[in-house]
Length: 242
Image (cartoon, rainbow, N blue to C red):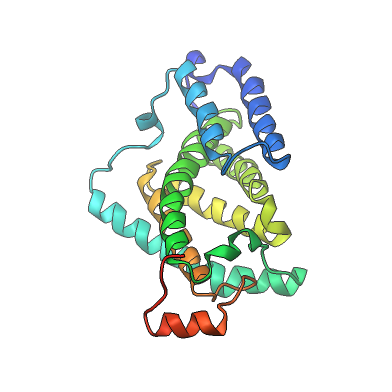
């Protein structure tokens, strides 16, 4: 890495890690409303401001050929969902005997109103918020302290996405592993596209959007199924906002 001393600021790292650990603890205790992502993003923003790093410096900018990158992001999101749905989840279910615990989303099944709310939150908090936090801030920040070249990024990918997986601890062991794998793939997309956030933002948003749609339809493995009455109304196009 060729960061200046001002941008590296090693003395700031313990405060950053302590703040992140505190947010994780507060979330586990139920003190964090809705999502810890805005609080983690605030830590990222503060660290970057103190180090003189702009969001565009870590990839929040349009690439030279945005439509091509956008198409790659959408295709990667669909591919990630197919991998999750057909490979990762069935494999983890065979190994661990459990599906991810998604009971927190049970009310979404058959509810058009909740689907639209979750889709909006997905793009704001997961696609943009998590990618800015984990891939835009955390991944380059940790790579700074891991040497130089490919090895530094590989070590950072492992460390950062283990933490990203643990951020999904409410989904149980299967959900943690699944999120870790997804985080690694999103990190690889970030690096492979010249450290630009457009592709991982779109891939994350698309993959999660399909997940939420499958939950709404009662078709997500381990999730709550549609009741017979709700299924009949959905087929007739009469699911209303609930």
